[in-house]
Structures are given as C-alpha cells and as structure tokens.
Length: 303
Image (cartoon, rainbow, N blue to C red; front, side):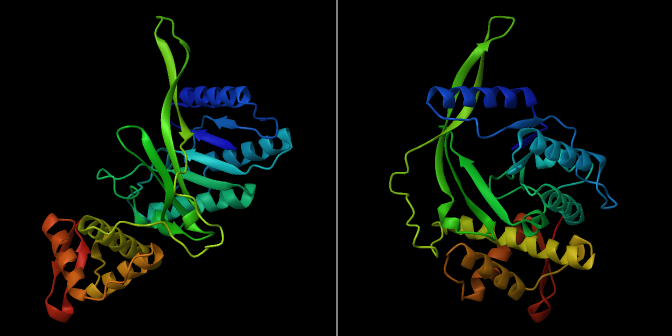
C-alpha cells in the first residue's frame, strides 16, 4: 500500500508503527506486506487536464515500491481529496472531472485501487464536493462515527462492483500511548479496532441484499438535494454548460431520485406531489431556485 499523507504525516507514521506493534504482539505475521508513507506534495489537478509532475512522481514511487518489495501495489490512498485537488475546486464539476481522470490514469499505470479520502459536508450528509466526484468513480464508501467513538464503514451512494451488503463493518476508536515528548507530555495515537458483528453477519448466498437504509423525511430531503446536484453536474460535465444555468424539471428529479432509491433498496416514489413538496422545501432553504409555471417549471442550483 502507498499512503499519500498530505495531512500530519508524522501522526500517520506513528499510527502505522503502533498498529504493526499491536499485530505482532497478537501473533500476526506481517512479513508478506509493505506500507509506504508518501509525504508529497501531491497535486493531481492541472486546469489543462494534463498529468501533473506530482502525478508522474506518485506513479514512479509506486512502481519503485513494487519492484523494491517484489509485491504488487494493491492500494494507493490519497489523504485528502481536498489537499490533492488544489489549486482546483472540489465543488466545481469540471475540476472534479479532471481530478478523477488523474485517479484513473494512476490506476492504469500501477494496477492499484486508488482511493481518495473526502471530508463529509457540514451537515454530515454525504460527501463534500461536486456530484461529479461520485459520478466518475466506481465506489463510494461512507465512514460514520458517533460522539462515543463508535462507527460503521458501509457502502455509500455508488457501488458499481460487487455486493454492497457485504460492506458493513463496525469499529471503535481507542487511544494508545506511544511515548513522551521533550516536555514530558504523553504522545498518543488513535487507532480503529473491530467491534463484534453481533447480528449484522451477511449470508454470502444472498447476493442481492443491500444494506438497510433509513427513509425519514430528512433522509428524503437530503437525497433529493444530492441527486439534484449529481444530475446537474453530470449534465455540465457532458455539455460544458455552466452548472448555475442548467434547469431540471420535476420529472427529471423524480426519475433521478427513484434511480437512487432503487440502488439503496428503497421503495419507488410514485406520487409526484412528494417530489413537489421536497423541491419546495429546497427552494425555501435557498438551495435551489424555481422559475416558470406549470409545464415550464424548472429548478436550478442557487449557487
């Protein structure tokens, strides 16, 4: 694995060393793998769409690591997307398309899975940034955690390959003391550890199962805004139009929302007035704007 540590690389190295120590004490054999921390810099964005020097350097380091350890590079983790897309903007559909194209080139050059870690939105709903980021990748994994340090790792809004029902892991965070600094203060790192599966075990024979999803009014509203952005930004990527000038009809939103609900194992919305109310709430909140009446009514992103 290559871990591109663009935020606090020293802490990443401490966590890796601590995890290895814990695993070895537990009797695990770690001799068959390798973990390389890549400190960067690593910008995968050039407005021209051409590979950056950082992209070429990352590919070179990955291939050197594969040769040195005589192992394939199975995974490249980029921590974080926000750091590695600069000077681009993760909220811009065109910039997001350029970034994901760079990810795909790294996959082709190294054979590795390339995963970018993205922060959640301020509301905690979904992934921050343009919907094109999710539209142009194979898989989205969501990691959520409560105030007690207990969390889950589960399939998100996009899961193109495999069975999403099998991506459902529970974890907790635990602090480990690793030494003291020059002032005598304790240095500690936080690691995730597995929690018992309880009743969450998945029957491997039931390949059509999907993780249970909640469907509260708040969930419907958040999903409507998310698919609205994804649809608009997808059109912008395909046509080159400005995101703010693209309007969607209620039917387009309903179709996109139902496609998303089908992927998540939720019942289809058959009553179009439900979407009318959801869009109305998004208009009231200032997320979208409405223009026209009756058959000419369309909705656009407000920003």
